[in-house]
Each structure stands twice: as structure tokens, then as C-alpha cells.
Image (cartoon, helix red, strand yellow):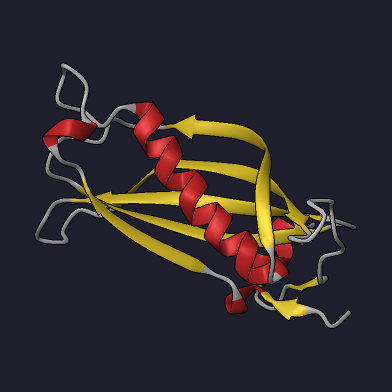
Length: 141
């Protein structure tokens, strides 16, 4: 199976924090953020594997700062490792105001997905990942 570059499946998703996304303190609810992170990571994993994927685990979800109502969040997902039938995806969340200023990292996590064969719903082999940049290599190791 041919190796795939990290950039081939990298996924970026943007969301605006609206009132129905927030808690009584007008900050984004953690569960809503985790949902968005899972979606971005799942799209990334599916693109890498070229198949349907299911979330197997979430490791070390970090909530470094509150994300207030009206902020724009950018969710970046990239494959860090590929195993026999699963991939690890690193997800980083950046937040900024509507004008794009004061961008800062607010959250990150590692997700593991299993590639599923559509016909029989059993795990299937995944392509190896080819880390090229020093940052990709660091996450790979």
C-alpha cells in the first residue's frame, strides 16, 4: 500500500461560536467543541484511509482557555501515525475574534480512528503516513 503525505488529508474547519453553542457563562460548551473536533478528525482520517472510519478513542483533550460567544474557531486535523487498521489524528483548535485578530491556541487532542470496510463493517488496512516537515516528524515519533 502506497504511503500518503500528511498534507493529502489535512482538514481545516471553521465555526462561529453562537448563543446555542454556549453555557450560562457565554463560553463554548466543551461537548460542542469536542463534537467539532471529532468531525474534523473523522474527515481527516477518512480522507487518509479512503474509507469510512469510526472513532476508537480520544486521548488527552486539553482545554487551555475558555472560548467566548462570538469567537471564530479554526479546527485543524492531521494524521500523525498509521497502524495496521487505525490512524492517529492530532487536532488543534485556534480561536480569534471576528476580525481575525488575537489568534491563539485554545485546545488540542489526539483521536484514534479505525478504518471500516463498507461491505462487512470489519476493520481494513490503512495506508502508511509519510511525515515530511520537522513538525510532522516530531508528532510521528
